[in-house]
Length: 87
Image (cartoon, rainbow, N blue to C red; front, side, top):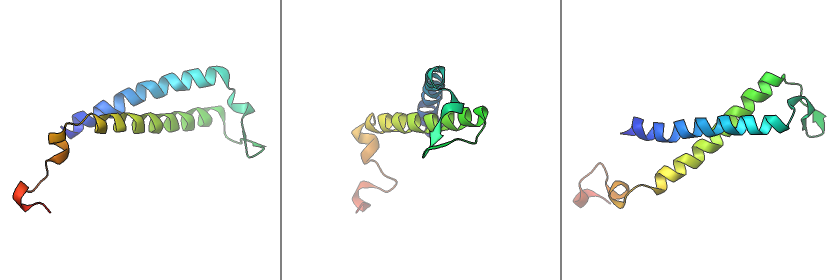
């Protein structure tokens, strides 16, 4: 079940990170970016790669929060120990 839930989080996040990458870099040229007033020294491919992973992490966090909020009360309240032995 954990692997299935991770795929519910990772796959939509991957797809949306890909869409965000295309949309952002259709408008922004990586060579024109500046960091604290100085031009970036990374190659275009490095900027594309770094941005993709940042987008992927952000959308994974969003998907994980959605999966957490979609859990039923039964899933949230069940634990590894019997009910009478819980703190």
